Length: 130
Image: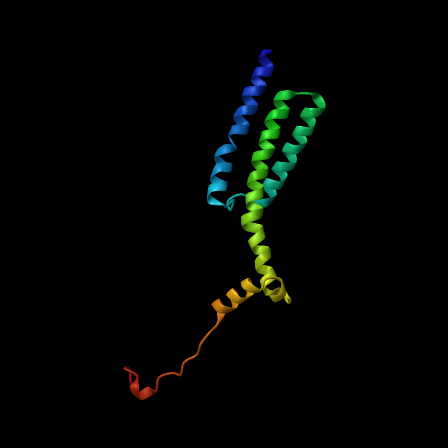
């Protein structure tokens, strides 16, 4: 192995491993709130293109580094979709017509949480202010 290949392996390993703490934090907290959608999508697309380029030029350090980085960044994007986008889509389904036939238990729970009761106001004579 020549020194440039070794340098590429070290560089690729470091930049790939830099994603691991973020993946672990995102996975444990089940939240990628601080990460923007556009950044994650552009990042995954760019890494995928680097992977394709690495395959085209037959550069093993480039292929391995970008393959692992794509797995890590896709995992973060997956958590963002699962725990941010999907609940919002489900919430929209609850308030659209016909939702009761799609998810009756969720609709019933929501209705129970929003029920209101009214009581008669106290008469003025029993008010402590009067």
